[in-house]
Length: 117
Length: 108
Image 1 (cartoon, chains in turn purple, brown):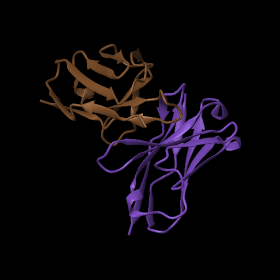
Image 2 (tube, rainbow over the protein chains, first blue to last red; image 1 turned 90 degrees about the vertical axis):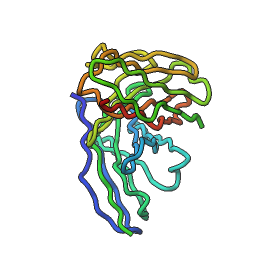
Image 3 (cartoon, rainbow over the protein chains, first blue to last red; image 1 turned 90 degrees about the horizontal axis):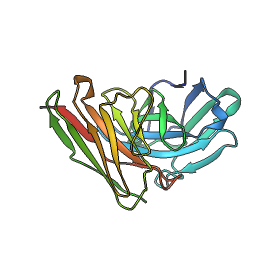
């Protein structure tokens, strides 16, 4: 069974750094693009970027380029999303999802990040 | 950037009725479109890809159609578990992906 298990909820202060994770199992992790999607409270889905763990090739949504860093460690089948300096506007639920061909066919359970100012 | 526009924002439907949701792309995306369902407190779930192919385990009452710039998701006979928010997503301009703003299907 394909599974993506994300790290738990985080409560941070503005200016702090953060790295959240997404561990894949049940499939060949290094051979599938893994994307990150933001969902602010009560809002829609926003694609942030996608990584190919096999060679760590990353493609960013221009809106998020420079704001976050996406990485992966294929040896432990885990993808990461990190911030160096959080803002209150980063408060959201973040999902990782596997791309089968181009669509997202399996999703993590989401990680709620709350940033206080 | 391809902008995806969904309508209506909210659709009020009675159980057993047909629901028709629309998604429009700002430029042609061929059939490179997916539909997702999201229930409160849950992650999105893939329903349809390539505009009209149902994902594994998706009931036949869900169907997708369209190509180019105009797309439709139809739920033929709405069940109670179908009340949710539905999003379309284009992947024609991979690696640049974009979602529509969503349509909330609520009980009439």
